Image (cartoon, rainbow, N blue to C red; front, side):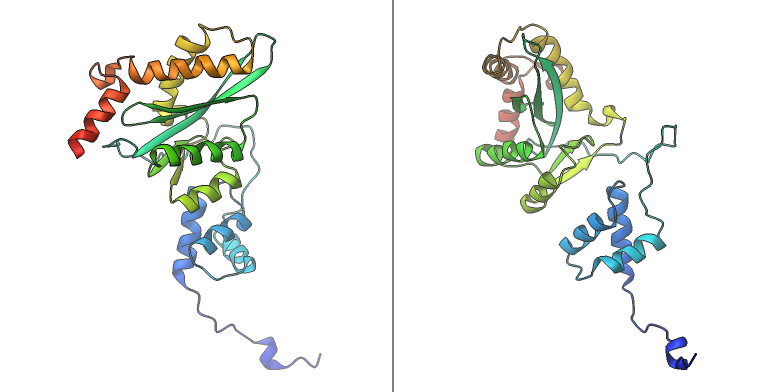
Length: 249
């Protein structure tokens, strides 16, 4: 075959950094539905100057290939325990709730709450709320009051979008995704959603989107400023938050 022996028996002399493989496995564990291209982008953000072909090789060797979802019961992933927040604006939670107008049109609300004080930070109302809209809401809150260290959410397409991921990286906010099918891991906002539906959505008949936004905002202010919360020892969320901020100062 006239093939040089040096070529036939060549072995690469490149030394692989074991930290790269470790970082890849860690990112894949945090984002189990990410493919190798998304993981490659995440590794480059962490400072690794590598191409996607190297990531793909390690990705295959570690058995990290994303499998198609099949409809059967599988063992649940290990739950990641979150520390209890100790101050206001340390951790937020957000989720969506759907309802309908009088003419049958469906609208959604993006509910964002502070896990420590139970304060409803914002309720965004519209017929469509995509990832970019979520980013705009968070940017508005950043100017009004600042941002938390971490935000807890489910695995909906709006929250796993590239727009929100890029924003969180730039803003220095950690995104914590609960396990699929485990809404109890986002208990603070789920509890709020129940009160919101029972006390606001079920008690009002919204003729149009403007009316829905107005009444929902009135209820949000009432919830924060006037409604006592049993888990806050009878205080309102705003009273409890202001009192803890005063003690911290």
